[in-house]
Length: 364
Image (cartoon, rainbow, N blue to C red):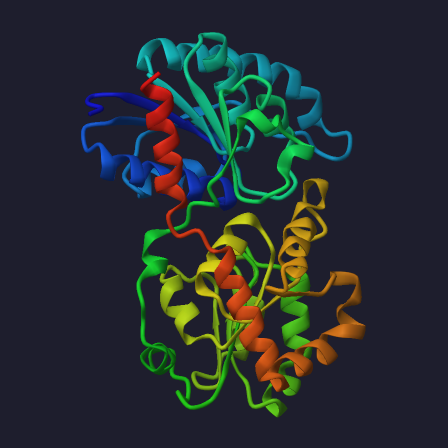
């Protein structure tokens, strides 16, 4: 039995890196209550708030990602990288971890590199079907790579790969009554609900789409639960009528929102995809084209190939959205097939599977 082990977890920049890391930390605590956990993140990113809110300590590194264009931040990157490496060695010397885990993002690069330099057993967890530059680099150094998609041998050494799925928030597995959830939002429980989620900050293009299609949804007899994002609440909050249209900037209780939904429109970040596989309701993905390596499109395409979801590219929304939406809501067999295939891809125990791999590596 493992007692008093010290594990360091690094990852962040976006919720897609942070929330899986927190889910793994929760699973570690559940298996080994005495485990000592320390997070390492980028000092100016959202993990510095989200991790302490989840009850864990975090240290910040002076690191940021490379921009796609020439900026002052890019000119500072080499200096930030050197400083972050020094900071990582200091953290490792002070904390003395028995194991290091990376979930991607800026900070996991220098921290996991420093850990492998000091021969600390390490693994990385890749959420996407197309890995980021940090995990591609680290894959050559760590002992193990936990992935959420099959066919990842294109990017990683096959001998290091373990298919675990993506860790998600535990409360999503709690069954909530659909009628109760619809009623709590003020909806008519006998009418269908469309849930729109574009990420915590919101999606400008998706918000514009929903604004343009409000009358279309009304004519389709759909009520709207619209998470517009913190950046857009003032602009789109005016459409909330307290009944058939509810507009919120951020939803903490996603279980209730998913329970109220009959159809979902979503971005295709790794965290969203993994959660939606567990929810197993009909989904139309609208991937963001403004992410590294266009990985959201590749995530969505992986599900489309399995017959588990529909996808519309942003550039085709004007010409395709109404047709695809009407086709979906009018075809109950398509809805059932999408949900059934989505459910096959769900990995509710992903965090526990990753902890299993950590335990094996620690036992060597």
